[in-house]
Each structure stands twice: as structure tokens, then as C-alpha cells.
Length: 92
Image (cartoon, rainbow, N blue to C red; front, side):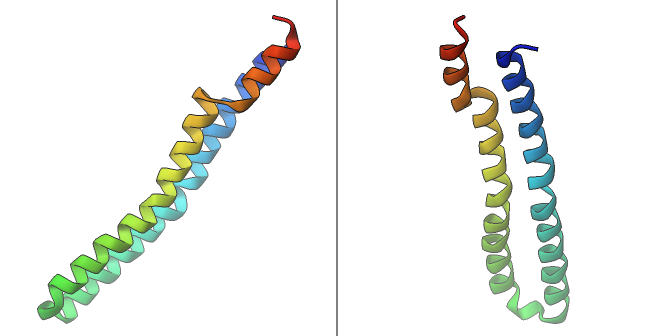
């Protein structure tokens, strides 16, 4: 396999692993946050507005980790910085 094919294959594999591994922790964190928020709402229904507002802010922060992994995957697939280097040195 030539260098261009190797870089392409590695980029796609690493992008897939980034999404797979990088979305596990946010999914678990969001599930834990939601279950705790529902438990808090069941115990203190009068504080629903505060609990829900805090829940949404926390979930947005947790979800940002998965979004960063998605952006890294897009960069690896579509704007890989190694492409120009390999193409320039391959003579193609």
C-alpha cells in the first residue's frame, strides 16, 4: 500500500475510534445527570425550575465533549494536515 492509501486508511480508522470512544463518556454522563435530576424532581417538585435549568446547562457542557470528538473526526477525514505533506513528498 502506498503512503496516500495508508494515510487515508489510518485517518478513517482513527476518526471512527474517536467517535466511538469519545461518545461513551458523554452518554454515560448524560444518563447519570438525567437520572439524578429526575430523582431530585421527585423529592423536591417545588424546585423544578432551578433543577431543570441546571440540568440543561450541565448536559450542554457534557455534550460539548462529544461535539469536540466529532469535530476532530471531521478534521481527520476532510481536512487532514498530513495529506498535503504526503502528496508533496510522493511525487504524484
